[in-house]
Image (tube, rainbow, N blue to C red; front, side, top):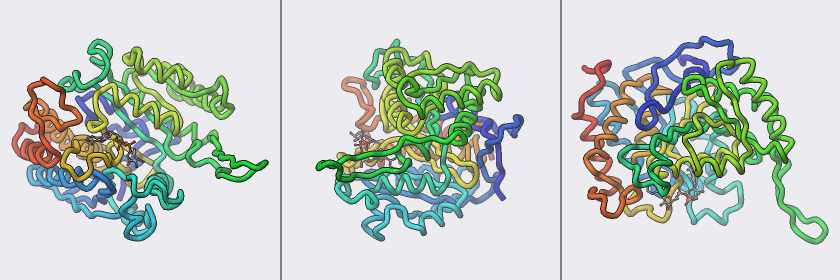
Length: 412
Ligand code: NAD
């Protein structure tokens, strides 16, 4: 049986070096939105693994090795079963998110996704593109809230393209709405009008959709510094005007301790580069969040380091790196598996109720960086660090998981 916790349990995903393993909080507010966060702590869990495309299978293998090492050390089992998604699913069954994959995901305790996409499928019709599979998965699993932490990693400060004084101490959580907005709005299409083709999509949000993501953001902000910035384009867009009104209403009434500010998206994009430390929690719609969370990720150095969690009101969450399938390096053993390993840590925290084991994973990743190991994406010229491939990084982290000091709570 699944436990259901409120969005309050989302809390501070960034008090630790990477994602943080928070302690769980039972519902205390009258929030209407409740999020499924975890199955009860068990000896065995069923996990759907979605390796996807490009570097996906490589980082999945590395992550599996690390998780197996964690299970051996901590005395529990993860029954990991793979399923198809993205381009590989198109190739095999002509569907980027087959029904069998959805069924398997919904029957699992949690889902760990690598990445999808690639040049090979870029000219396919929309319904046969890998990205369509991703959108279908989010929609059909009701994953409306996406949490993306971007916290400076001390060992990688020099990997950022920004000055040390700008990025040192950055700790931003972007809460992105994931199942609405212009990505899902209708009508949409390309058609002939007055002798030329026109393309159109519909940027649309209902009050209910804004209300539930605002509650998640309020909960997250209240468990962090209490500062929440809502990002919109209310000076131009009607949909943003509604976003601003509903967000203000929810936060003012439900989260009186949260200090809410509003910012236009163009200014937010600029401020994130100019002085990112002004932000703590940001909440925004799907398309603005897509862009801003990638921008925030570059503050901390590399896409290859950043995990994310996508969570709905019930059922398993999906945990995935924020990066894509990196087709430019696929199959070359150059991929950084750490974002997927850290996504697995978020999965342990939010879906499997094993936050201490998540801390162990995070500590092992940190220890690998402390040892000076770097994949190409985080290696700086003259940094004195050792360049390693995806396999080696996975092997070292797996080894460290079996050796380093364990948080007391799970010592066996
Ligand atoms: P990308 O994230 O795949 O790659 C951007 C750059 O970052 C590339 O130079 C790549 O080599 C590098 N990179 C990304 N992840 C890395 C890692 N783990 N280790 C080392 N380097 C890494 O973005 P893109 O090039 O814009 O997109 C490539 C494909 O991925 C496209 O088909 C796109 O649609 C898809 N995509 C998928 C997802 C997802 O699965 N959630 C997200 C974004 C893009």
